[in-house]
Image (cartoon, rainbow, N blue to C red; front, side):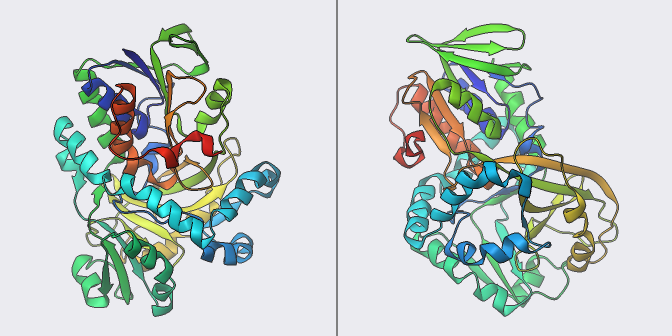
Length: 411
């Protein structure tokens, strides 16, 4: 079949590559170059085993304090609150303990296959030098900060997710360049660190093109399914295709509406600054400073990437870089010698559902339309396994695990 993939982020690219591997004629549609939108700016973590959703009982208890604290990693543009309210109310409902445990179980089959699925594509595309199997690491400056993670650790344990509790000496051995102020840490060892997310996406794209895949830099403005296929309204004309995969991240909602389906999807806007390393020692992997504002320092190929926070403000509000810039002095205390020279400031749009589960599967109203979006903070992590699942569905094969938790009908 000829399959159109709408969206050239890491999820769309992985879908396209797996579909091409399955023998389909595949075209990616996106007005931007592959990997240059939301997929560009993440912290580089393939966090295999990440099953704890964003909404938890602790967040529900502390929401008022979180939203009113000017230094909180979660911010809301109050002018956007009326539009956000339905999504936010559902988000809070999903943070009940029983529901959190259900969501964690639903994320489990995706998450435990995440790195293995990437390794398959890394081998095909020759991207070995970009990805290092170093796990995902969080550090804590206080015993109280670490103790507050007990609930999350219980969820990981209940789902048989491996993690190591680190003592101060362990942290110094793993990351000697960090300031000697951290008393506890948590390492999820089964994941990896990507030192250039854009280069990983480009490596996958280059292999896709070598295999005969096509890329069209046009915006898809409309989608119209028919009994035999799909017609796309592109900027330079109509295009017909046998099937279409909507993998447009935070921009998927409008296309879904045109199909006649309903989804609760909003954007958790994420920011990063690229800092010159200065005189800092070698940082080996991304490190989360969990009880010091929740920011991340990641040693990318072009500098130290400082990522932080979530801003709930939709797709159209201008960026506000002031909060993340205020974190630079704090980051310098965590990584002594780090320069304060900023070489790039960036904002992206994480496509997020209120239950932290992606939308993966066939449209109930259009049998030739498939969904692959809503991966929130786990777009890079879950992209390869999502692509493998989508290729199986389009090819009429049985998926390797139950996809019912990710159906769009849950909305």
